[in-house]
Length: 153
Image (cartoon, rainbow, N blue to C red; front, side, top):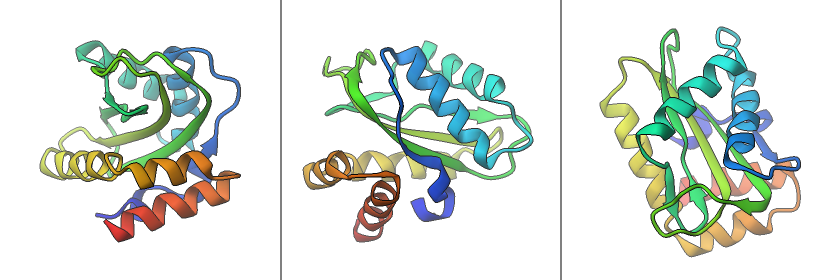
């Protein structure tokens, strides 16, 4: 599965004013509703928060991959946002986060979910990819970089 399969252009954004992890997750939930008419932003936010309580999804180098298994979801849905300024995400490397990839997976999805998380972690471990994402000028450019980086990986 490629990122292009799960992230539509309307779910890639330069985020508005975000000052905290909670607000970042709220905005991410709102963006993820663009692909999930059967889920509300509140349901998505609650799923993301429940997963964060198990441990931070901050993977290091200013990147977080908040994710949740969602009852009623029948496919993987992704969203990506770049924050205007980094926020504390309680990452293991203690670095604040400015790149956030959100992922919703079907409640029963296991192997596909893990493979996708692994692929995302690999992509976000490449310094060139991080640099290109941080330099993208607008939502469209951000989406193009995200898709291009995925297809080269």
